[in-house]
Image (cartoon, rainbow, N blue to C red):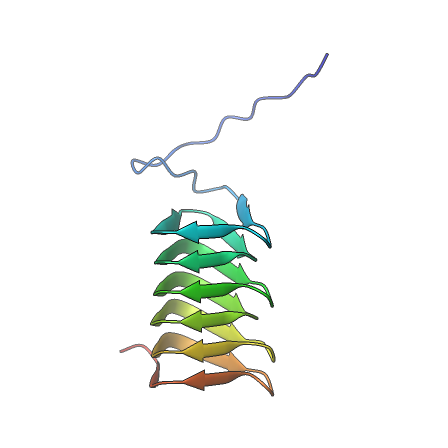
Length: 125
């Protein structure tokens, strides 16, 4: 009834598909507790009490809340984070973003209205 075409891609030694553009979606109304980790892109619109690690792009929605540390390669934040934020490349804080904790990123883009309370270290160090 349903047919799919299998596509073969090389899988790295870590079990990751280097050509994947997959996105993990955590919807609004979802509450998690503990550590959350993804090797793919993440769209996060829920609530998390714990640590979030994303190997690629993290997009955090306007109503999302994380009470814990966030680590990602790149991130666009529209929600609230209470914890340390460490981004390997570019961090974008949209106008609705609020971070209570220290920020470390290679580059930072801050829209008017975005807020953070804590230290901010930008650059390659």
